[in-house]
Amino acid sequence: AQSVAQPEDQVNVAEGNPLTVKCTYSVSGNPYLFWYVQYPNRGLQFLLKYITGDNLVKGSYGFEAEFNKSQTSFHLKKPSALVSDSALYFCAVRDNGGANNLFFGTGTRLTVIP
Amino acid sequence: NAGVTQTPKFQVLKTGQSMTLQCAQDMNHEYMSWYRQDPGMGLRLIHYSVGAGITDQGEVPNGYNVSRSTTEDFPLRLLSAAPSQTSVYFCASSQVGPGPKQYFGPGTRLTVT
Image (cartoon, rainbow over all chains, first blue to last red; front, side, top):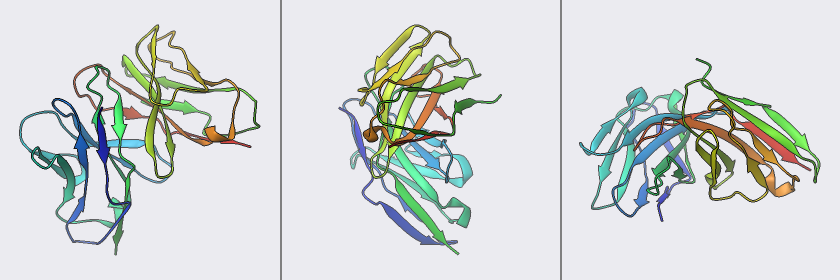
């Protein structure tokens, strides 16, 4: 069965500093991995995905994620955090059973401190 | 494009009442799904559909029904509401394929008293 884990409920970072939001995964077969962001009282928005190819994936709003097969991780990163990046971030893995179903992590709340 | 729309935005039900949460998309997506979001639990899949006339259960289907008579619409029915169904419900859609991004609606906040 597929699953993802986000070990940190909360991440605080100062504005301008680099940020990392952690995600580890467990899948059988090749993983299809995603990051989504949720702003208050809004639906989820797609940030980026890893299907195959380069281990460093670039996405929206200056975010990137590094796929590490040996560590089964897919951490989200940004070189310089903005206050507007404060939101709830979800890592997800696609169901390898065939449909586009996603298994989500429990979410990490990122707070960027001015 | 309006994307994925959901109605209502908020709803309060009494235990035992039934209701339908509406979801529509105008992107001609074959895949549609319903998730519920609960604090500390992320999003969990309730039901999904890979095309008109085809539906299947997700991780937490009990107490919910769905149907897909058209490509655009995917309503979620609560048969007899229970306090455990208090949650925020999200509808999502995407193309069918190995890794398309999903588009989420704005959500419906449901409270069952």
